[in-house]
Amino acid sequence: MKLSQLVSSKSLVLGIESSCDETGVAVVQMCSGKTPELLGAALHSQIEMHRAYGGVVPELASRDHIRRLIPLTNEALAGRNTALNAIDYVAYTRGPGLAGALLVGAGAACALGSALGKPVIGVHHLEGHLLSPFLSADPPQFPFIALLVSGGHTQLMRVDGVGEYALLGETIDDAAGEAFDKTAKLLGLPYPGGPQLAKLAEGGDPAAFKFPRPLLHSGDLDFSFAGLKTAVLTQIKRLVGDVPEGATVRGAGIESLSEATRRDLASSIQAAITEVLVKKSLKAVLQSGLQRLVVAGGVGANRSLREQLNAACAKAGIRVHYPELHLCTDNGAMIALAAAMRLQTDKAQPSRDYAFDVKPRWPLDQV
Ligand code: KG4
Ligand code: ZN
Image 1: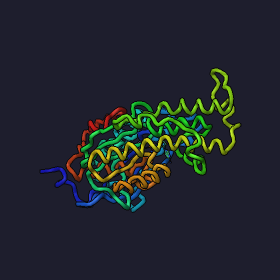
Image 2: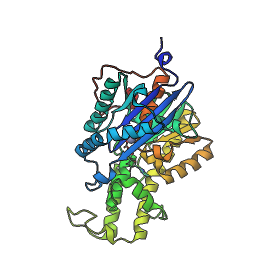
Image 3: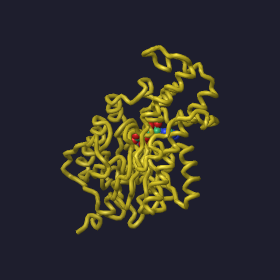
Image 4: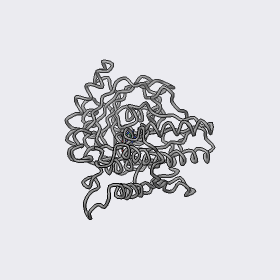
């Protein structure tokens, strides 16, 4: 008998996300033949805690996940008054991510599963992002091309169904989110820089500075963003004058630049990143012969990227789908959803031995 025949059409899946700096817990309910429904969700972002250090401190992240997981689980269950023992499956992010942070979620999920006598399911974090648009008001249909743009990954994939992922291209160095975060730091913006840079870019001139668009005409679907921060650093040095050897640009007077110049810098950086993402995504969709694009991951929240993609896709007759804004960055709902969609399609491997392991490095096409 197939697993999907054993899965009740009303099964409840609890999902736990703890791969980086957000602790997320959510409950979804399976609906036969339909996308699972989100019943409740709770999220805690560690941004404030890590800000003082200019980036994520792994040890602090793990400790905070431990502190937050049980209260967040109670909050997620309270959404629809769901009793803990009504949960049928406990899903958790198995990777990729920070090893210690992943272990907290995996440990909590296995303890919960063991105490309730329910199976646990390890989920790939990027699969969660990839499937998150299915929880939106305008869900996609398979097959489609996916642009995955997060803090750690920038990939174009062909998606033919749950678990059917073919990598078409990816970054050969920094991820798009990393490019936003690193250049934002050069502009003196606090961590995480992506949303801050996007805010500063509003009203700026995207053509004020000409930053490189690496691999734009490379003929393949790969990306490269590492050169951008060097180009931005050089431009800032030119604007603020000579920076002594070893001094940071920040210390050397980025603050002395006018608000208008900093806006133009932010806007030009954003334009360089988004132009490459838009052009390569369109190329991937046109090459595939498909007519659907799905954008997922934290950078998918970027308004300018969405506007440009919407315009380019409308012109080319391509439908584009995004997750709801609050589901773009890390959250528990996407983990519960991915587990539920795998259960519905006989692609989950629920386990009752609770001997969890995590995979800090885990390519999506090897799931
Ligand atoms: O998917 P995510 O929450 O975490 C990872 O799995 O990495 O993505 C976080 C990344 C960060 O680099 C953050 O700066 C970026 O997404 N990000 C944005 C925006 N919101 C989040 N980048 C540009 N514009 C935004 N509005
Ligand atoms: Zn993520």
